[in-house]
Image (cartoon, rainbow, N blue to C red; front, side, top):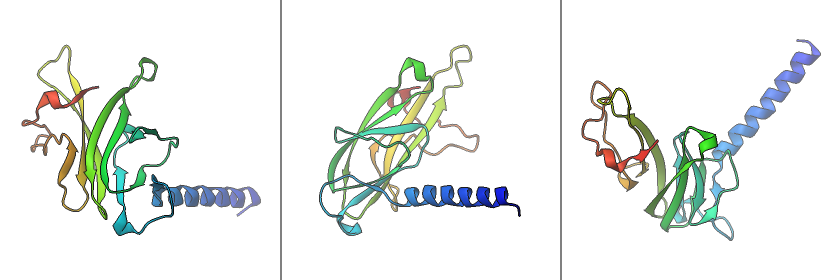
Length: 162
């Protein structure tokens, strides 16, 4: 292995270690000393379709993090989404009660109404669920897709225009 290959391996190793380290540690979203895991709540954003903009009206100033540590209680999350950057992004506000020691995942699915071929309607659905029990505690869960991958029982109006 020549010198330039060694340098490249070292750089790639450092980048991957830094990225992996950032992904493991959630952002502490409360003041004071860190608390035990059974005293706080965790949220994980399990989607690349949305960006968490605010928690309880406090702006998120980091781009890469998708894990947050919160105190228990009622929380308001503001997400932005959209596929056309120059037209602005849309916002969705979801509230949920966070329990101590719980992990919550935020999921999205983008659905397209297939019966309108000329002007198809697309919606994004967001929901928050408890990690272990999969209980939905905020937003709207469109249900599981059938064997053809469609969501027949979805309340279309619960989605947000994409």
